Length: 137
Length: 137
Length: 137
Length: 137
Image 1 (spheres, each protein chain N blue to C red):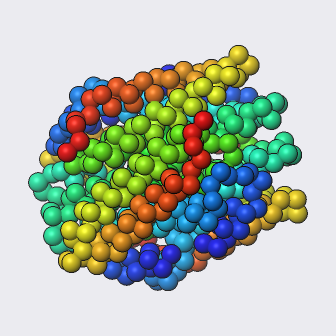
Image 2: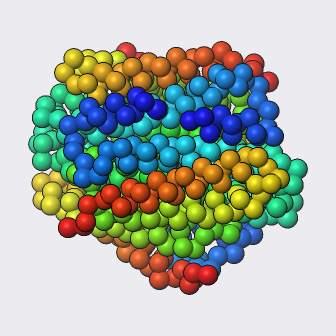
């Protein structure tokens, strides 16, 4: 999403974060959100649905959380740093939990393997963004 | 939302949380989410828009976070406790920040006064839900 | 959510719609959104999960659509009437589809019975809101 | 988001739509959703905030609607075609309205120019997806 990079550069609002790290995190959240929605949906169509209940649950939570985290990071005007830190922590945590569950099914379901990778990347980007956050007031 | 209370009672999924506390928190999140959306919108129509920039920003973040927190708490099947704890922390934090900003405008704008109250109640309910969460694995 | 009613009354933004109808629709959307999230989650924990695949799918779509419809209706400042009409049509449509699917399982699952009722009420409220919308420009 | 393309290909759920068109629409929705969130935020930080009220309002609606449309299109299992058609219509409509408003500010604000382009692309992708939808039952 090159367009979105241009978008952030054209904003009058400055950010305490390194812009490249921030962009990478927003894009990882957007990708992971859609990937988790798609993995939950793919699981719903699998024959061995029984064993995928927990995967669906965590995929739904991860999709919702990545979606809202990406949206909130896309706002640069005068946010609350302590909140953004807590939100990034929660996003990293659900990415870790969802990625670990997907990994268990990675040999049987290609969509779970891809989703586990996407969760890992998103967790890493959230952790990188956390390191860039300014100290709280 | 009495209907939603019946809904939770009819679920096969048990929860580690006290059901009344959980319901109260979900409903506080739903109310605070809509109230913050509405306060941001009301601010957008005020003559002294300049002074309400930060209020709009925090209202947007609070609306998004309360919405997703209520949704995730409404799921009872086999969630990740550490994630839910982190999410509730982040929701309590943005409610505190948004409520404090709205309070600054409470004398001039009735919608900010109402929103500040709604944020305080939601913060309290998130804190009550946090105390009910089972210890992490 | 009495608080939310006070909120709308304190907004500087006027609406072309009858306020009571608008409030009822927003609250029906909020309730139906949570009820559908909760029904999808309850289905996920049922023994006869196989027969509930489609119910879960439609519950997810209905939850997402009701959530965003309620949020957008809570904004009163200078919206686009043709868009709001199309959004209400799409919300009424998914409520009808989801309610019909839940109704098929209403005898076996109390949560599906409650959810079918909630979908019907939300569809009705969306249709009532549609009748109140000003003619498009 | 190449990852997401792989994701859709690995799903057991078949779609009535041409896969390339569907992917393009999902990605246009994801991009336009973030771009509109970012444009609303950039507007909030501009000196001439007064003239950007309507732009902020429409950006918010467009961000929410694109987000939910992308999410719902990412689900392939047994959806309701009439609903998806109505949702795509509503998404195309808000993209048109938001793009037209952003275009008015395109000479003064680069973020509005970029956002107007993103809205136009998303509207086109929604219309392309509409043409690919199977006839309703």
